[in-house]
Amino acid sequence: MRMYDIIMKKRNGGELSKQEIDFFIDGYTKGEIPDYQVSALMMAIYFQKMSERETCDLTMAMAKSGDLLDLSRIKGIKVDKHSTGGVGDKTSLALIPMVASCGIPVAKMSGRGLGHTGGTIDKLESFPGFSTALTTEQFIHNVNTVGAAIMGQTADLAPADKKLYALRDVTATVDNMSLIASSIMSKKLAAGADAIVLDVKTGSGAFMKEERDAKALAREMVKIGKNAGRNTIAVISDMDQPLGFAVGNALEVKEAIETLRGNGPDDFTELCLTLGSRMLMAGGAAGNAEEAKEKLQRVIADGSALKKLAEFVEAQGGDKEAVYDTDRLPKASIVCQVPSPQEGYIGHIACDEVGICSLILGGGRETKESRIDLSVGIVLQKKVGDFVSKGEALAVIHANDKGKLKEAEKRFLAACSITRTAPVKKPFIKEIIV
Ligand code: URA
Image 1 (cartoon, protein in one colour):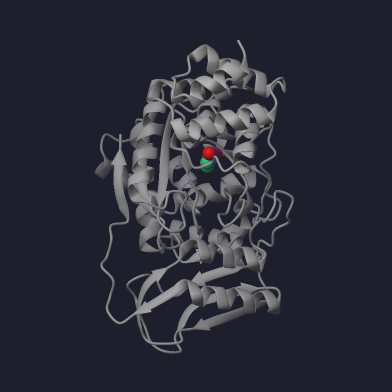
Image 2 (cartoon, helix red, strand yellow):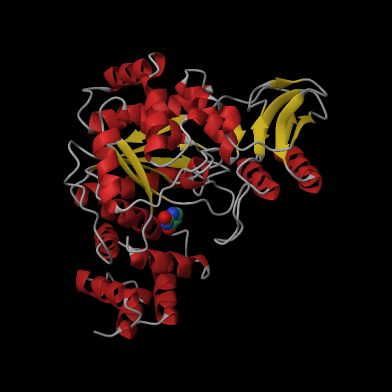
């Protein structure tokens, strides 16, 4: 078999066989096929697309390119959750303890943030001492004893995807449905859970700006998961404005804690209950969504979800007292309101721009090597559809540098559009694909 022939076949619109896909993934992972040939193939795939069968074969080849995590020593049905990423997306922080306190083991692999979206691991590191550098043994032990654990992605998990994603990133071949679906699902399948609940975001802060694209991606990932024998469900949710009010690592941790106390923002609480219900149903802890929601609301009301967060934080070396006393979390030295320049309704908030404001303040990573400031960020005071008077606060910025504060404030004001009439309210949950 020759890589040249595989490139030409795809360039001419042909369908690659499983053997051809296995050949290029294996050769690329081992460094036997050069970047320039794989780049050419990625561009051919970008234009000619892949069939459902090819996409499944590509996913499996990438999943098997490294270690496959064996979670069989964890009792019960293991359910994983994955978000396609967004601004203010602190869902895992609240969802993990909620689901775990309903008796469903959560064994989660997570990543760090890059660009305008934050990563769960960075957020969790706001708890002084918290570490995700667990061995597989510790990871399994924690899930069996605490009910939940989170581990940083190891280098050996789907290494083909790691190489391919980095290559796609610099060759303008990221935004192809089959390539995105296979990239995400290869990591999820390798991470070993029995069931996968996907949170696919759509809107100005999401990867998929258009709802129809988000739905198509979700359907593709659900098919891949099911073909691989994993119960897979996708929830399509809004990311046309930040999720909740807080954007920034420690600020989001605080908001997740408030949510576990029953005082969370409406959209964020709705998302946690919707995803959590699907996780409970997939794990066999509830027969329908209503029953599942009631269970989740109960663990919030009786304080067991908050207690579970404290246990989970402590088991991974973090300061559990910070769960009960959020003053122990990192705090910025400057806290400053952003007054509204006019009165009216919040018509739109360019969500990715708010993520960039957090990045400017130092709360995000420009490159993989950047160090982030966990204390900074933005807390919205108004969301789309709210009325604001002139001079009233639109947001509160938490900063450690006056220059960065000014830059973020300017950018934030440019991201908000204020209209004379209230915008039409759009549903937050767009669809659930089972
Ligand atoms: N996230 C991934 O893991 N892979 C993609 O291709 C896009 C987003």
